[in-house]
Image (cartoon, rainbow, N blue to C red; front, side, top):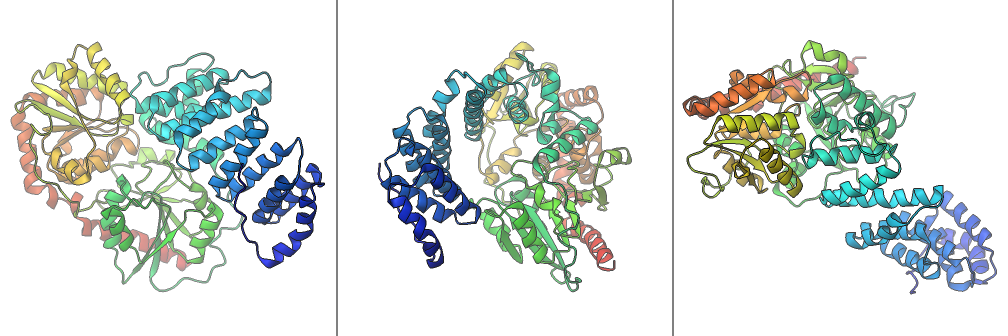
Amino acid sequence: MPSTKSVSLPATQEAALAPMLVQARSGKMPLAELLDSAGRLSQQGLPEASAKLYESWIAHTASPLRHVACFNWGTVLGALGRAAEAERAYRQALELAPGFAQARLNLGHQLERLGRHDEALAQWAPIAKAPATDAAGMELRLHALNNSARLCEQLRRFQEAEQFLHESLSINPSQSGPIQHYVHLRQKQCEWPVYQPFGALTHYQMLANTSALAMLSATDDPALHMVAAQRYLLERTPKPPLVPLHAGRPKRSGRIKIGYLSGDLHMHAVGLLTAELYELHDRKRFEVHAFCWSSEDASPLRARLKASFDKLWPLAGLSDEAAAQLIAQQDIDILVDLQGLTAGARPAILVHRPAPVQVSYLGFPGSCGIPGVDWVIADRYVMPPQLLPFSSEKPIYVPDCYQISDRKREVGAPTTREKCGLPADAFVYCAFNNNFKFTEDVFRSWMRVLHAVPNSVLWLLADNEWSQENMRRAADAQGVARERLIFAPRVAPPDYLARLQMADLFLDTFPYNGGTTVSDVLWMGVPVLTLSGRTYISRMAGSLLTHVGLPDLITDTLADYERLAIVLGRTPARVASHRRYLAEHGRQSVLFDIPRFMRGYEAELERLALQHRAG
């Protein structure tokens, strides 16, 4: 096995390490002394020196326990981000001890970091299948199963991921993390009922461990949303510090510094919605910062977003505490969190309270419960008085609709129904929200609508092959020909916007309403039918329809929603009148009056910032 390439150390570290290296190269250093010395070097913040010590010992020592040193060496190299070298160290450990399961697990992690996903899964497979004879062996097996599931989910191999989780939870049904993933995977695949107990796993355990994001689709009960958010925070965030990070900073003056915190400032729903927000800030009153860990996806949107900030601070690679320190050092007056508790969120940054005013907006349409976040951007439709007891944040009510939009979104070339695979003479219902937002009750309602409107089809997003087949089976069960479900592939945003015009009526999801999607649909002049409930997220589309001028398309019960969908499908002339209204007035409505939104939004943020400055 070839050795890894040595890394040069600073002279002071070389001098301190020299006596240890002499001993390691002598071939006479006991393993216990090696482990102690290397461990102390790592604890002193000298991991490179620790790696060099392991390397020297392994190269010069003939010991039956060399595999242990190789394993530790791989661990140090992995922590340094030297994945290729860590791979070689773990492989050397396995050559010496082929049954060393911990080394095989860690090798899989390094292969994953190197992008060699199938090789990583192959390393975990024998451990996942191995019968466990003791508690330690069981933990290794669960580790292999759960990591295989996690990686398959990331690769969108949903059915494989679910099978791994099913096996893991059959062994130990008390695992909170795997239950969270299992529930959300079933949502993504439209596997209904989502809460299907098996083995010793109960309905209660599944509900109690549903993630905060998945709970938004699972129920319209704001109390359950609140409980899910609180559990997430207990598991993922530290206790708030006694002294906020912003305390003791110099008194603020001059322009108000506003910071936006997000990992979604790229080709993502949040990035698409907010691009004009940053561009239109009044630079005479505000200095606009971004603190982000967004991927560099090389999209024109990413370039536009980056250009819209006065300063952009990358947070990737920084710990949550270090990121919070960086934000505090910039003397930010108001920090706006655009991520909440969604995938990739970093709520611990906000727990440190790096800014005196911290606000939740858009990314997680509901109460996050994050300590240190006192406010949420809302309007009086999405957050009526009866919802306030279930929110840890106080509302900042903007005068009109809570949702920002982008008037510069690019629309592709006109298309036709034929090119979209749609029948020319049918009434086309459309539901392009992500499939995890679909619920069994609403889908059954859609099938009853198709029954009642014979010459109609339902146009859906081809999210994944398993959800498509499950929806077709659900249609079969209700006597609806599966050919009436037409699945559209994902396309670039301009082409997606262009083809929306081929639909007659957009059917919103419940309880997780469409946000960006409904904005896009209305911008393209297509009417939307929604159902408003008891939660912020179930009232989003209702707010958009109110402010675009079509409140008559808002319903309050599933029965009314279904009845109106049938009426509209049977009276195309009524739908045509809604389309004419949107064509003539939609883009001129207050919903898309972005300068007007900015005036109200900035006035509220300025008020809060100046109040704090005044003490």
